[in-house]
Length: 521
Image (tube, rainbow, N blue to C red):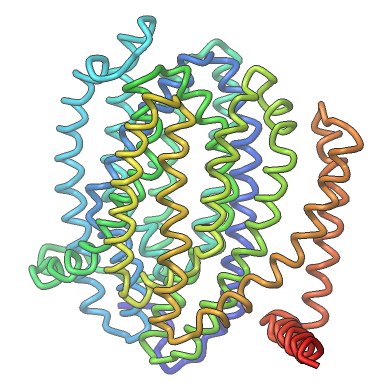
């Protein structure tokens, strides 16, 4: 049935990782570029109230992801594992059982969507001009997300097969076509409904392409005989823990707009979303890099390669830090200018939201590989409990603080619990599981990224002191010297093979010992 590589055939994991990461970053570059320039276009075409309503509807329907029950991550895990071990019969049962489960779920969510469209204007501060539009938007978006549950199964299969480059190719084509249609439609007088119809159509079309790709990679049989209770119990057993993490993720990512919509206004959602969107972009960059580590760690775990897991843990998180640290520094130092250029000085208050969210998000994103490894080796139960507590704390703090601090309080409600998870749980937990000393991990993963980021930050501060950027060209002039300095550092890292950071750490500790000895004399 399967065309997958037999277990005894060597796989060039390094080449595969380069292909996957390279294509993922290309897709992400297109996504970020299109989203960055499209967001202010949509904002100014629709206005604050309409744009805020659009964000609110997507935040509400984003909670549909809770009903996934962790099945998607289970698919990635078992496709990777079963194609490695060659168990084609069990693979067919897992996939068929998942498809039936998702289909039942889709029908249920269509019913929920129909009910929700009737009450959305009663629960939230919907602008009077959009009282008729809001129910229709909710119906369109909710229905498309419901249908994407069974159709989205095939994207999970491709992830398990580590065919990220196929997924990314479809994503690039979809994003570019969607952006072009949105610009044409809004320039011709289209409104929220037109924008929403275009937005929801492309994920459905992408799913059709994913199905065709899966059919090329796996001779996968479909039928009722491949659906069984044992496979369903496997899905739920692994997915139940993942479900808790999904709940926490939704509380972290979707709660803000909902709380603001309930206690403030749709215009306040717009102001908050500008700052949070600039934080989301670098987070997406890191997640795009880290996603390859779930199936890779599953393979290492299946073959008992503990050393491979340890190296992945250190090197993967170092790669995440090398990516997120300079972006964080750039947003902190040049964020005000960027917001002014991007959407206009009217929205400069969003910089405070950016500043609060970027610090905690950077701490978490720098450890993105850690969470992917936990999923890959099926050791994510404790993570689920911790992030669920974090999500609950996020919701409670946001509701309490919004009454006193407005959108600043909502940002703090998100940032404080996330920072606690990133500092007090993740590094200790992973080091304990993989049997790596905490000091060794921190030094080898983060010493080099911090060292390389320091001159980058100094260069940006110097350029900001010279002049205030008011155009994209001037912003790039400010950013350029820092990028050059950081690029030189990365080249030094590559050619001197300091990748593990061991030599630098050895020299550093030797210096400390020598200094201590000199003082003792």
